[in-house]
Image (cartoon, rainbow over all chains, first blue to last red; front, top):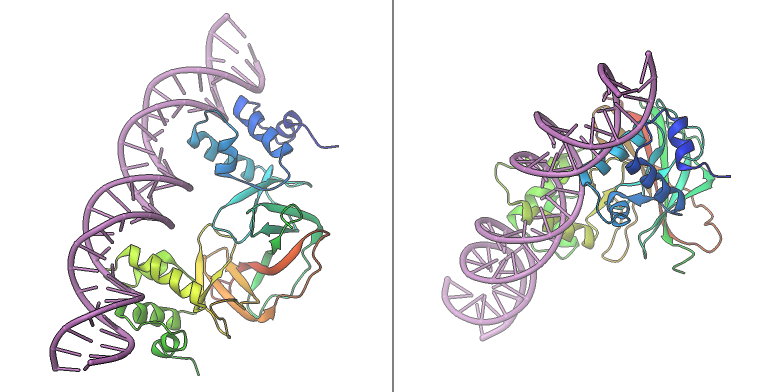
Amino acid sequence: MPASALDILVQHSLRKTTVRMQVLDIFLQAKEALSHNDIELHFNQLDRITLYRTLKTFEEKGVIHKAIDGSEKLKYALCSGHCSEHAHEDHHAHFHCDHCGKTICIESMHIPAVQAPVGFQLSGAYRVLKGTCAACS
Amino acid sequence: MPASALDILVQHSLRKTTVRMQVLDIFLQAKEALSHNDIELHFNQLDRITLYRTLKTFEEKGVIHKAIDGSEKLKYALCSGHCSEHAHEDHHAHFHCDHCGKTICIESMHIPAVQAPVGFQLSGAYRVLKGTCAACS
DNA sequence: TGTTTTATGCAACATTGTTTCATTTAGCAA
DNA sequence: TTGCTAAATGAAACAATGTTGCATAAAACA
């Protein structure tokens, strides 16, 4: 069962404010990763700056993670597992649809460990698939 | 042996202009992927708009490809192989250094074929490694 | 309830990217 | 070389996106 917006805030020791609850509800209902603009469109009126700060806070606290999709737009998706303030664990692939532009987390596709080139130290990896999503096919 | 700026323009049926030659020279000398701003800094004075259009043209014609690195910045790198107007073949991984922010093409690391989830049609894939690069270690 | 800390809303600003149009230049043919 | 045509450039104006500082409002807690 998915956590509620309130649960998520409590889990991460965040104050429960109207804006945060609303933003979390949007994420909980969304099936794909959301850009700043996507979220803004869900509101009648919302201060852009507040949303920037809300997303930044959520990301720092491990509530959401950046979903790299190869598009110019930065998107976020809810962390599924046990991300903390200190480390994200979004070790799954993302799918980006060339047609509708949506970005979907593919939880089932984990990112395999790879060997770093000589002299390089690895701290993480991304994997992005692109093509046409099920809805657009 | 690497191609010269002029060679590249001729190969892709592009007019040889001062700006294009200069931009290509910067790419040829650079070891890492370059953002719009990176390139702008190499010039004493250069019209931003012209650079946007130059990069767009280069990308469409298969001269450069987007180097997805998980940072907010869009970067480009020279296509190594045989990219055409119709299809890019930048099927190699990119390394993004968390420390210096540089993005390096790892030509030796090819992106393995993966199976698309049910209902999805794949047209490509990205792979990004992040960590600390050799120079920053 | 009152106090402290944090979040919000606003203004102003900075950066990044796009569109339109006049001018200049490259490519090409006479 | 000269002139023509198509493409590239540069400038202005605009649009979108992101940041900083500060006053106000709200949440948490004693």
